[in-house]
Structure formats: C-alpha cells, structure tokens
Length: 481
Ligand code: ADP
Image (cartoon, rainbow, N blue to C red; front, side, top):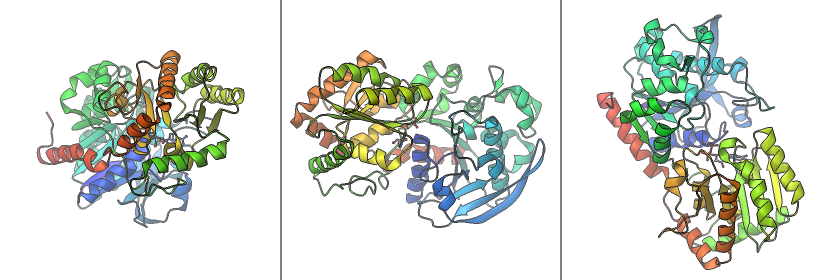
C-alpha cells in the first residue's frame, strides 16, 4: 500500500456529510492512477457496515490508561468500493447508532476517548506491517493526533519517518478537550506537550496543523478564511501557511451521474438534459402534491447554524406572500431548526414540505428534479451540494463564501452558474429567491445555464492532481518548507 487514509466516515459505509463523500471517492480515484491506496475507519453501527462481509486482517491490542484494549481490523471482502476498506472493530466505543452524536443529538460523553482509541488502534495495526505505507493521510480532527503520535510517541518509533498529510473538511470542529484528560493519551515525552496545546486545552486540529508535513483544506477560498477566522486558530494558519493548500473536492461520477444514478426516477439519455430535468421534476412534484409549472426550490443539509437553514422560514414566508413557489427541505440536526422547518411546513402545507432525517435516495431525486438549490451557508469549507446540484442541472443559490465563492458564479457574471447572495441574512436570501423566480420566468436563460452547468467537469480526475503533487513531493523530500 502506498497511501493509507484514516477517516471517521466513508461513503457508502457511514456518512454524515461531505467528509464521507470525499473519503469514499479520493482513494478510489487514486487507485485508478495506480497509486495503491486504502482507507481505514471505525466499524460503526450502520446498515451498510452491518451487512458488508469482512475478513479478519489483524487482531491485537493497545495499552491504554486502564489496561490492554483488544481490537480487530477487518477488511471488506467484496472489493466493490474501488479501494481496500479496513475497519477497526472495537464495539464498546464504535458500535453505536450515531457516528458522532447520540440519537437525541447530544454528544457522547466519551468523545475524545473514541477518537484516541481509533487512532491508537490504527497505529498499532500499521506498525506491525512489514512494508509500511509511504504516506499516511488523515482527515479532520478525529484523526488529528496521528501525526504527533507517529513522530513523537516512543511506541510508534517505527512509523517516525512516514510523512503525513492532514485534510480539514470543517475547521469549526477542532476536537479540543481538557488537559485533565491527559491520561487518555499514549506516553509522550513532556517536552512535546506544547504541540498538543492550544489555548490551554489539548486541541487535535491545532496539533495536526503543527505536526503534519502538509495541511490541505477543501477550497482555496476556505483556506483564506481560516487565516482570518478559524475559531481561535487563525494565527496558527497564518504561521503555517507555507505548508497549507486549498484543494476543491471533486464529484464521484460513479455515484453522482445523471446517466447512471440508481436513485433517480429518470436517467438522462444522451444529451437530453431538458427532458431529464422535466421528467424528474414531474415525478417528484407528483409525489409531494406540488404544481409542476412553478419554481421548485430545495434545501439539503445538516441543520446546524453554519448551514443557514434557520433563515429559510422567514424568507419563504415573505416570498409566498407575493408568488407561488414550492419548496422541499431535507435534513436533520438541531432541535430548534428542525422545529422551525416543521412549523413552516405546517403553515404553508401546500407549498413547503419538510422531510426530517437523513435520506440518501431522496437527496439524489431532489438534485435531479429541482429548479433551484438553496445554500445560505454561513460557513462552507467546500460544499458538495452546489456541485451535485449543478451536475444535475439545478441552479444553486449560495452565500458568497468559502468553497461556494469559487465554484458558483452569479447571474451578473459573463458565464453565470447560479445566484449569489452577499450575506447569510433573511433579506439577502429573500432577494436571492426573488431573483430565482425572475430567472424561472425566462425559461430559455434558465435552461441554458442549467445545461451549461451539467457540462462542467467537476470530476475527481482533475481534483486528485494537487494531491498527487503533494504526495510525490513529500515522499521524496518529506517537508514542504
Ligand atoms: P457538510 O459536510 O458540511 O455536511 P457538504 O456540502 O460538504 O456539507 O456535504 C454534504 C453531503 O451530505 C452531500 O452529499 C449532501 O447531499 C449530504 N446530505 C446532507 N444532509 C443530508 C440528508 N439529510 N439526507 C441525505 N443527504 C444529506
């Protein structure tokens, strides 16, 4: 194996958001250019992982604060993912319904323990390989202590010279925990404690930024934003900027394809994009009792403050007073945003429907059917929804930040792709929706933007190139600076 990816999520095995999509695609596309790449993740209690077939690759244990902890690493045997998938089986910590939070939405009390146990299991597994990976690529704070453990942990001496890459999918979540929990770390010499620390707490994201040989995040725009505002880490990003890179995510064309998508009602035949949109919109509208000849807006996402879904009810209230539109909202998350969407759908029961929960098949049908996707995000490191939307001919309405800034252009641009709002506010969103209604009244322009968007190459074939360059550089020289 050349490259080992470590992630807490991976599509289709376990998905909460964009991290899973990337983790399920990047290794596959790296393998397609003959870079032998595998991924390891925890064995969560998800339907896919419960039904998959596995063979035991390794059974071992690691020494932890309360004694030896036994674990197994299993390898998925069907080989249909396009890369070898390994899972760490440690049922007390990972065999839980929610990947990060309990079913009631509250965090697990042993969050840091779960992440550290995963990282220790991975490193204990790798250290007994006869031929070690050439590089280890870790994703988000859940795996952020791996670079430090490898470089400074005496028990992982054998891994010391392997370069590491750290990718930030969302800088909002840093995984910080109190020094009172220092006992859950493996032994580390006290002189390296400074690498763990940020603002008097153990901060896995800060530690990874300090210790990994290269740090990437999922768009150039978001990297710029992290240097200005990163929940307290901005000075760290400024200091480490030479080894930081913004690389926009790609689309996995085997999962997201108007010609092959197994979840949508009507596949695109040849270049018949208009017919594809029409047929899919008709069937979705029929299911939800919507009028087909009116604008159809959708929102898909985690219902958290950063996604701006809380702005939708007030904006739609204003819009529905003036014009007839339809809206389908899909997502789950914080109780108050769920409640606000539910109330909005009750108040406008003929025009607004809210599908609570996580529903992969419905999300594909929505991208294929809608006229417009709403993304009024306050923070959006890359954003995959707008890429999927454009790929399926749905016009994105986005706040002009992070990865949305570089991937969507406004109607006023020479090559328009969507509609941009300047701020995540109700008024701005309302203006964006009104502009969308005007665009809908100009079907020729709407169709031409939609069809051009479907032709843009958002594939991973392009998106892997910067990763390949970083891997090549690090496996030769081992340092970016
Ligand atoms: P984030 O990772 O911040 O959640 P991204 O835009 O990077 O946001 O990725 C979101 C991914 O999760 C997309 O594939 C989107 O379709 C999917 N998704 C989000 N919420 C849901 C949901 N409730 N049901 C189905 N898919 C969802």
